[in-house]
Image (cartoon, rainbow, N blue to C red):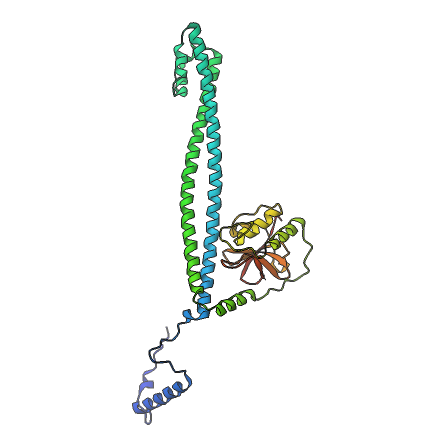
Length: 351
């Protein structure tokens, strides 16, 4: 490995280059530097790059990027929680209907037992039917020979219904455990999003109103990507989705929201396509796989434009080099240049 140290000969004394001569040269250089450098008031600290508006803006952008990833993770957990809650509700409904059926069958068998008792005394086998464990009755094979085929069929039917009911109870209990676990995860994700957005908000508050306005102008004036080729006529569903997304321009951003009055990025595109009769996944990462990929230069109105490598942001291309999207907290659904952020994919839903 090459050394960064000077050769020994470079430190040797030579006539006219003694230490006093070098000191004089250094003093002169320092004086020259002082003449061109701005004076720093006594006791003042130089402004750190991170505390300047450009540094603050960069930190805010990073926080928004991380927050958006956390929001999409929150959306995924929220979607799983909703699905589990619906499954648990349906399971509870099936259990209630199954229990009602068991009660009716036990009532019918009890009536049969009562009729037999009145006619000839209660058969011991029928007495077993009234226990809390009708399935155990069938384990006593010798007893089955003492009842008629009609009674035996009803007992077997009751046993089958009871087993199904027990299985449904077990499945419902498992769903409730999973639901509780997802609810805890949802709470954790929500707290994570709030921390990141709170940090971004505190940083933004360090900027003056003029600096915040300049930040917004810079964001809106991002480089525009020129798309090649003539834009084709919209299909029915893509056209309906574009009309829907245009209809909510100005609606507020709200993380975790999917319409109709407020949206986050993936909630907006999901809602717009729902108006066109197309079901999209809830998250931007899910929407990345909701259709066929097309090159950015061949984007058509209605295509989904995914941003960043992790697809943590999504907008809808509406033509003219622009997308409509829900940008971030404090902003509204709006038009922006398609090249406002690094594009990772363009997806044509339903194709």
